[in-house]
Image (cartoon, rainbow, N blue to C red; front, top):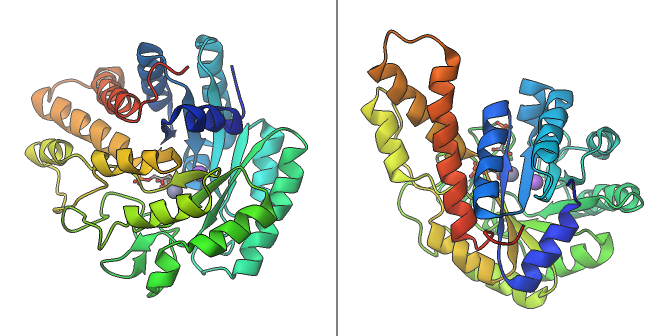
Length: 328
Ligand code: G3H
Ligand code: 13P
Ligand code: NA
Ligand code: ZN
C-alpha cells in the first residue's frame, strides 16, 4: 500500500533500523527495488528527483510507482519527491499523489545559490502547512551538500552550490538544526556531514576529516527524536567501478560512503539513506558487460534484464545492511 514516509520512519526509529531511499527513473529500477523488497520483506521508499521528472515525466513516474504498489499489495511504499526546489514544485507533487515531499530550501530555486536561514525556514514552513493538512510527510534540508576536500558543492549533477563554501556551510550546526526543526515542524531533516551527490565524493577512502559521523552524533544528541536523512549515501563499490572499467568504461579513481559508516549513522538517528549512484553504476556495469560479451544482440530486453538484476543486488544488500529487512 502507498503510505506516508512519517509512518515508515517512526517504525524505523522505534526499532533502530534505516531505510534506503532509492531514486527511480524507469521501469527496470522500480522492478528491481520491488523484487528486492519482496525478497527481504522490506518497506520501500522510492523517490523522483528533478532530473527524473525531466527524463521520464512525473506522470509516468507516478504510475510506475503506483503499478509497484498494486503489484505488491503487502509491501508499504512511499512515493517521495526528492529535492523540491520551491513550494510550488512540492504542491505539484502533492496534487499528483506523492505521499512525501522534500522541500530543499538550503539552496534558492535556481538550485545553486546558497539560501539564507530565514528563506529556508520560510519555504519549509509553507510546505509543512500545505502537506500536513493532507497527511503528507515533509523532509527539509539544513546545511549544504558538498566536499570537505575541495570545499565545493556538488558539481556533477548540477544542483549544488556555486563557488567555494565554508566548513560551517558544509556541516549542519546542531543548535541551528534544533531551532529549524522546532520552528518548521518538519518530519525528517536532511543534514550535511561531508557527503555529496554523484560518483565522485572522495578521492580516498573517507575518514573523519572529510566525512563527519561525529557531527551526526552531535546532531542526534541535540535532537534525539528527529528522523535524520543522509543524502549522497552511495557507497560507490570498487567492484562496480572495476566492472565498468573492464568493459570499456572510463571512470576515475573515486570513493563513496563506506557501508560501515552508514551503519554507524543509523545507530545515531539516520533513518532515510538516499541512494541513486550505486544503482546507476550497477546497471552500467551490467550493460557494458553484456554489450561486450554479446556484440550481435540488439533486443533491449536482453541487456536491461541483467541491468535490472544488478540493480536488485544493490537493493538486496542495502536492505540487509541497514536492518530494513523483515520490517515490511
Ligand atoms: O538528487 C540527486 C540524485 O542523485 C538525482 O540526480 O537530478 O541527476 O536525477 P538527477
Ligand atoms: P548518491 O548520488 O550518493 O546516490 O545520492 C543520491 C541522493 O542523495 C538523492 O537525493
Ligand atoms: Na529527498
Ligand atoms: Zn539528494
